Length: 369
Image 1 (tube, rainbow, N blue to C red):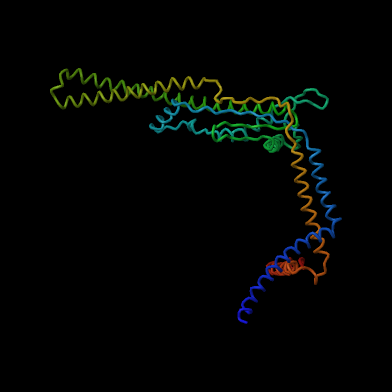
Image 2: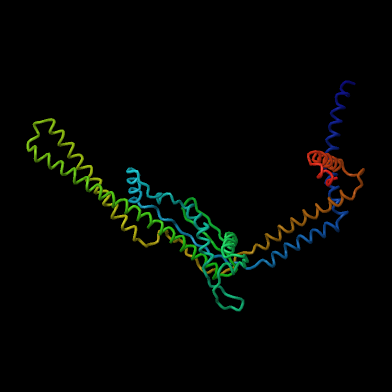
């Protein structure tokens, strides 16, 4: 008997587990039954959403992408040495060129200044009858604002969506692309952005070289005067003390004056080299970025991803149809026959609204009531 009583709970647990699995299976069947009972609503919602995605995929405009890539040039060792020397004397002549990482150039491509100068330029396009004409981006994006500045700002916001930039972390190569509805426009914009990046970097480096030249020139003149004074002091000592090797005091004074002359002479030589290098860099007009892939006029259209859009539309249509069916099913049931979860949700919602009314001012309570 005891053995039978001990085995009875185990049997009950097994039956409970089987019943739980059966309930889970029945719940799935009930879900399918609800969808089938409201199949007209499901089909209508499904075809509406799928139809919208099909319309978007078909009417998606033709796009052309022109891309380019470049490698930023590393900083010159002489420039870094000049900056370090300037900092030793307490002077500041700007940041080092070595601080310009590939990510700096990627951010420069989409900077406000570069994009604004891109917006105001005219580019060739091919119109509907196959003829070339010039157009600016304000006209291309059909921006309508009251002021010229407002039109430029609005066009820049639209342009950012058509410019993609990336950096290869292994090689440091910066690549960017421009996508528009016209191949000539995409190529013209990509080429102009590349020129603007190169000009910006070239001009800033020339400005930095100019600052280094001014600093080095001033220091060379100052240190040359100090070198002349040190040499005059050493010369006067030698004239007054023709024989000083036998006197420790005179020998020490001679060594001190000679060290002062050697130190200033070394500084003058180093700054003179920096001055000449800065003069060369200031007039340098060669590109400071290495072009890896120049922008070309795209011959092929960019993929429209119609299949991806249709798949997303089918999934959204099925989900939307199922949601519509269950909302209709739950809302159509009387209050006493609704599922317990829905009844609890309605009760909690009513309690929440009641609590919120307590914190409202009296006029708002009346309007809420």
